[in-house]
Image 1 (cartoon, rainbow, N blue to C red):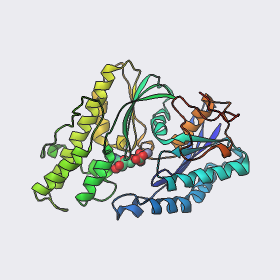
Image 2: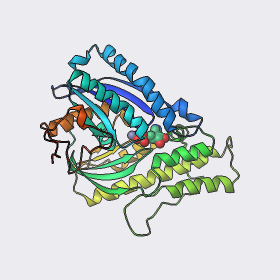
Image 3: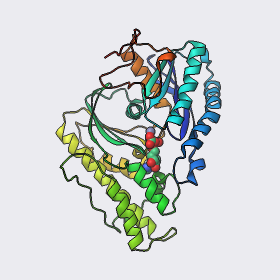
Image 4: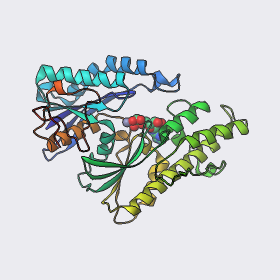
Length: 353
Ligand code: KG4
Ligand code: ZN
């Protein structure tokens, strides 16, 4: 089945074409328009700029994906689009575009949960993954640990009570004049020789909960910069950011190892933009370098926001709920989740389970 995916929940517009269910599962073509340059001077995503840029890009991206893959829109058998969570003005661009295509062509349209799709990205090229699984989604908007007994039976074990891990990297980098987004800069400038120059203590929940907290990291980094009079351009910055990254990675790895010890699982998935981080990938590979609990991380290009993961998951949603109604009139932003207890809407308008 040829599936076309659309993603515009934050600051990346993406369109992808994937082949599923024919014994040759693969990403045929993907085009991503990153808006990083447009938002960099503001130090974060400006929603109005994001949605306007999605609006200007999505048509051309779709045409290009079709042209480059040598396929025609009429050959596409399923359209899949992020229905949430995300910035509403951004979400609505891909959603309205995909609905328009679905109305015009009659191709079924499925709405996909963005966070579940990040987990799905680990399955691209890895059909061997087996449930139950632990999955950590760590990005600019989320740091959440899930337990999955199946693709659609997902339970939250722990989530950040404040900032997401990527958000802290972005904010600290911005404060130190390192540009936006901060995660890739911290990755590039990481120096293991300098990772102990500044001390960061591991966050601990006073109520003993397994939840995460990252705002303390941000406060500590800014305090250290102020106390040591570190301003943009200071040669001590790589020491500060390497120490910060090393501690945050250690915190995430420890949480995952603890959870893996407490659950009977067939594997661990780590996904989302921050899972692209070289140090995190290396430390996780070391921590899970033993038989029994395989570690699965998406290929780097499928860690950050992309449409291949949306198309991949859309196919799974349709396969799990073949009788649901996939006509475009039923789909709205945040209208329903594709996972958990409530499935997509059935043909009679009720929720399938
Ligand atoms: O998954 P994503 O593209 O968007 C959200 O759903 O949030 O993640 C974006 C986040 C940003 O905070 C960015 O700084 C971070 O992922 N990120 C990285 C790396 N690449 C992107 N963080 C650390 N190391 C990287 N190489
Ligand atoms: Zn994302």
